[in-house]
Length: 161
Image 1 (cartoon, rainbow, N blue to C red):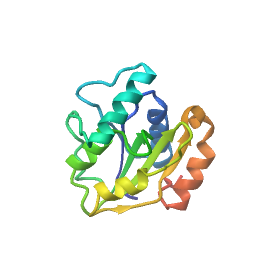
Image 2: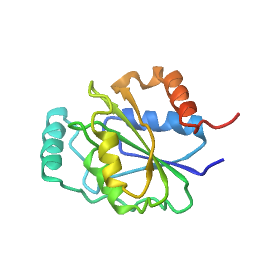
Image 3: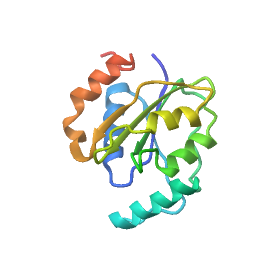
Image 4: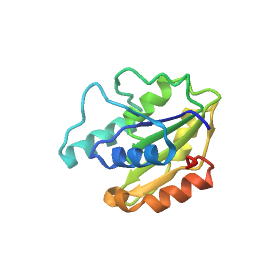
């Protein structure tokens, strides 16, 4: 069995719920990526801020990163913001040394699926094996257990029971 970490950033709670589901299915440990300055809760405000940050390549300060040393596999969860990972996730990926680790992206979205998240995760983790990711539509996570199970089995990361 591999040591698994599930690191995620969630703005609305959907990505956190997906991370919890992955934890249940893999037995991994959870780690929440927290920006030092929280994003606004109003939808239009966060959309505008995210667009500007992504356009500028901005990396917000985040809390202490997880100690990824003991983990073989690091799932990385993000909302799909403008077809890429949220800036706090990009900060996490740049701050953590994931050399030689298996990185598995996952996201929640409002219609864009994985978009460029897998490609951008690979670019941020050039010395890692980046596996096929998973995308769940917004608030459909509670109904996605079967899809998550099939995905985890397909990438051979489902906990044996």
